[in-house]
Length: 199
Image (cartoon, rainbow, N blue to C red; front, side):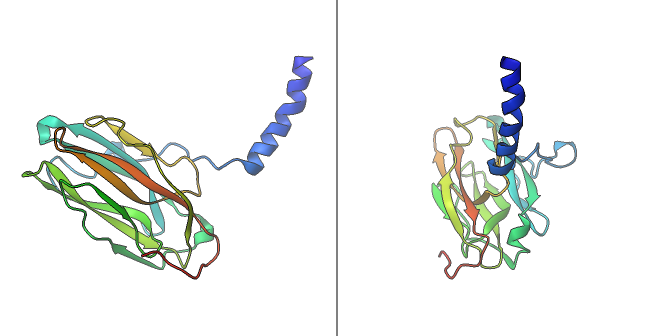
């Protein structure tokens, strides 16, 4: 009897999940041999290829290396419904040693990071590289949990569904641990042009 029910309901569940479930991103390719975007205590600039956005962030902390982190990113093409990026730019610098909150202006999506290490603060300043897609607008935005879960831990943040995009982040800085925790601002994007933009 249980086998009959399983044979009847399994195809129905599979079809329903295919129609209504979110598309799952597979494992990310962080580049050849898991190379890092930086070396300790050095600046770096990472940009996704044209038409792609950041979908994963990996980082490891090392107190002996100036309480610095190695960083790596993964990119994926934006949904075809968004089209090609119409413009890309660098946002304002977020200073080292401070807490900050920033989203890409002009409804942009994060497509890269730039960072410079400051030994006097044992921290980094950050800039987002943002790209705008036509006049698409964000909606259903939320903050992720904290990455890493505790100061000094490794972090591995991944977007698990296809139509969700990183628009920015908020960070806290611990003067005791000389490390940051990140919450990424994640949104969906409209599939139609909208008449407004964020500041």
